[in-house]
Image 1 (cartoon, rainbow, N blue to C red):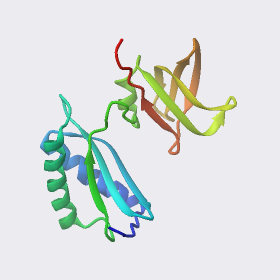
Image 2: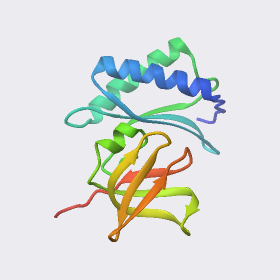
Image 3: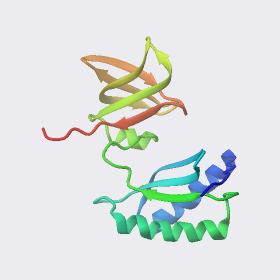
Length: 162
C-alpha cells in the first residue's frame, strides 16, 4: 500500500499515549513504537510484550483492537500499514526503566556521533544515569560512559547456549 505519512511530534506522542493506555488495559506493555516511510509505503509498528512473552494470537488481538481505536481517533493522516510485533530476543532498549531492568546483560550501543573515536560499543551494561540518559558499558574490561541521544540505538545481545 503506497501512502504518505505526515507525523508531527505531537501526533507521535498522541499515538504513544493511545497505545500505552489500550495495551495497559489489555495486559500488555508497549516496548517500542516506530514510524517508517519508504518507496514501498508507510507503516506504524508497535512492539509489545507481557509476562511470559507474546505470540501470534496476542499480536492479532492487539492489531484488531488498536486498529479500531486508530480508526476512531484518526491521529494518522494518510494511508499506512499497522504492524504489531514482539520485541524479539535482541530487543531495542529506549527508556531508563528498560536499561535498569537489563543491568548485567550484554548490550550493543551504536552512537550517531563517534565518542573516543568509535561509534559502537558491545559489552556488559553496568549502570545508567537518567537525565541525560547515559550508560556505563564495560567493553573488554574497560568501562565507557556512553551518552545516548535520540539518534543512538541500544539493543540487547542474546547469547545462545552457555
